[in-house]
Amino acid sequence: MRNIALVLLLMLAASTAHAVIETYEFSSSALEARYKALSQELRCPKCQNQNIADSNADISRDLRAIVHEQLEAGASDEEIIVFLVDRYGEFVRYRPGIDSNTIWLWSMPVLLFLMGLAVMLLQMRKGREATNTVADERADMLRKKHQEQTLND
Amino acid sequence: MPWLSRFLPLIAFFALAGLLARGLTLDPTDLPSARLGKPIPEFDLPLLDSSDRRVPEDWEGRPALVNVWATWCFSCRVEHPYLLELADRGVTIYGLNYKDEPDKASQWLVDLGNPYAETVVDIDGSLGLDLGVYGAPETYVVDAAGVVRHRHVGVVNAQVWEEQLQQYFRED
Image (tube, rainbow over all chains, first blue to last red; front, side, top):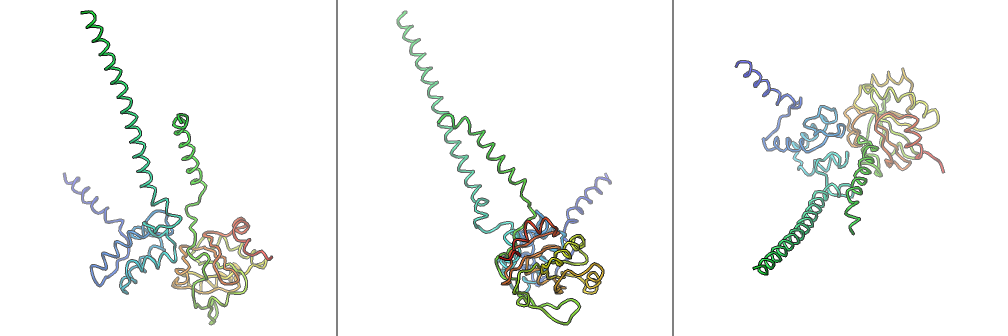
């Protein structure tokens, strides 16, 4: 029982272990919240798929420092993102703006949904036609049977 | 068109296979620089081993490589001999000593040879930041007008020079 408690405690510790090394002082908790949101949403240019909040890369540390510095200097989220995109390209955003490169990325979910919907509707119509034919045949058969019976009587 | 619906899965398969095959040949670490086609960012930095300073205009007039390096960067040591060779062949290379200790950087050039026409010292990495540097070594092609034409991340070797960089130095 004691072992289980210990394991659970260690698991709790593990969830905080991946947090980044340095801590920043913020003049307000609103700034801190914005810092957290921004650093989750900005992508480390060096690593292929990590946000700057999770990454140990030097460049991520630098970018976190910039985000902190600019937040304290009164910059808006928008301004900070534009500042970084000017230097590192749309790659640094996990939600890139729409341009000729990213139009497929953004439009694909809608296109795929519409394609799926079209296929589904087609199949349903085909299915209904098939059912109708089967039903018609069955009705014909029953009618014939009925006629035969009445003739026999 | 009944034949179409019969072959649709096959067509879809080849389309997907083609897409994935292309994905395999692409290098996901090859990020286009956000500075392509734009002038090299403003800077005013001291030269290594000198009290002089340099601004972007000082480097205009001929195409050059701007090589981002540091003594802490292992791959920089790997590419160094090839940079010396390029410099020997008359290619102008400017060094950007990135987040380094100037003493160590000077010693490095004494020990290994100096391929750079000039080296500016970017201790806090501010020019690196404005250029969009995310790790050394990186090499930029800057044309005679001071516009960034190409960025290569990683070691410059004969293949990289021939395939990517040389074209900007042809005189015609």
